[in-house]
Image (cartoon, rainbow, N blue to C red):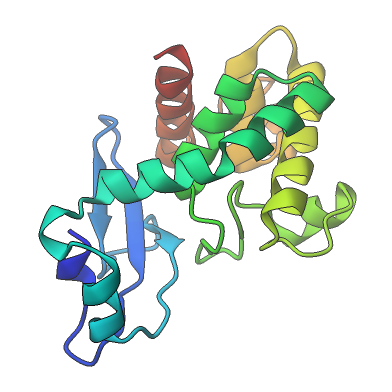
Length: 194
């Protein structure tokens, strides 16, 4: 999969993710519409470096995600403990938001592991949204705020994380009728319960 994303000029393609109304997840380097969310921002690389660093034939996208998950495990566990949020829930949000890509950027401007928007980042004291420590801390604090705001309904907290707390409130404290948000809630809850 990773090799398939390499272009002939030695540049990795951006990777976009879309979840349809049935909960199916699609990845592409050529989004068909604005519902696709960029989860991996490309960087120029040299093919020879990639070939020498990785066994190309054995690389799979899930292995790449798994490696990043292990890389951030301690950070997520410590941050979740510090803010008294279930680490499994933080993992589920990060998996859904960025697939553990600390430099992920969405077309709407969300950045980092927990895909923080600029206003949310400022609100929770995040100066550098690409810094994993700051991003996970700010995102976890925001998640805790939403859990308290919408308790005991975790689904509403997750809907607010995706669509904004005002969208949930505006829809009479229910999950907004946006397919992206409805699928987001299903996906995070599914990952959380695994």
